[in-house]
Image 1: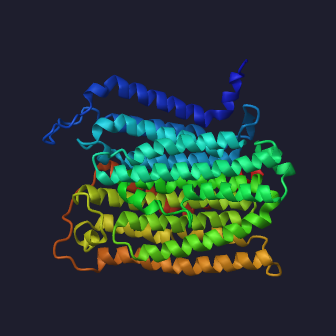
Image 2 (image 1 turned 60 degrees about the horizontal axis):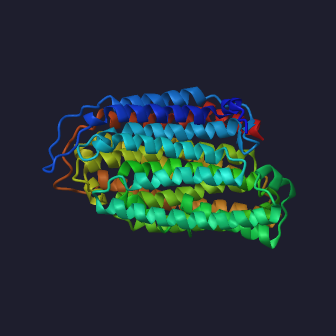
Length: 499
């Protein structure tokens, strides 16, 4: 069988990621003997691979620069793989999230007890990103599933990377079991679709799919499997435990990049493949969105551990992301991508602060540790406040604009004279109420930092340069993405060109 290698020219993001993987692997293999190995008494030599993290960050930045301009629509491998400007934009956003994670992780990954795993960490991050790229570019259920597993299996390794901590191993076990269970459910649904349609190509299914008991069951099972990946209620039970036990840097990566890729894939498949069955999946989305936003908000209020707190926050934010799909239009792609972009910078800013404090607070991340933080570390408290305000949707930060666009997308074209229109407006109203509730629990952290007394607040410490850089990028995004309309216009023009 002859392979047309020119098809790889349509897969530039994946090709550049593979090049990054190979370079990182060779660099790690050639210099692994210089990595610091901790001694039994915890002592270690000074870092001998200080250049490694900057090298990987520069490679990831180069990958973003090469692929930042939206590509034209094209296919490869018999139509199983496709790309268009909208897909190119979401890949760039995911790569930006990965870059922030790489920058932020430097202080943690270069600790004596983790530095010998530095190469594996970078390779696993790039591997998950490659799987997510394949997932959002899939035009065939088989390639989609392969991309999903390419992202999920390295992610499980990342969750359990800190294997000397009991919680990390436990979290990885829960993640693996949940991922296997959700994959099984999804495959069950895909088999129903294949049995009914006789093909797994998205385009072929879309032109002849009709609502039959078999296709409806297939769609429900497929949605349920992906609902586990996005942590939508009622498929969210693994989220808090996994987020709490995973290394904080990985938790941040899991909450934004992984979730963003799965949400975009869900949006694409629902609109592109199950478009003729929109009246069925819209009702399903109405229920899931309301449950996700409301239940997650109520549970978040009760949390005292910041990582569990952010886990329930991410479930609530997933509800807002999925709300963008309800509109079933080009605007859905635009608002979803913009929401993910804003969510990446805001959430990663919060996790940068949590990670920095965790490193200087003996690994403790409970809410009480933040009492009186502004007295000793005012800059961190201020940046944390900005990020939380953006997550809560307080103007003038970007989070307010992203939520506004999501609400507009959900009711676009909806009429109050029809049942779906009434439901769309009702869900948006419930989401608005929940936005107020979320403000309350985000402000609990602000209250702890600025108002709650603490006789022994966390002592002043100097954050690592990499943490400062990650926070600077995130803060600039939180402020500028909402102010400069060119960002939204760039995403919107790509979505329109893709329809």
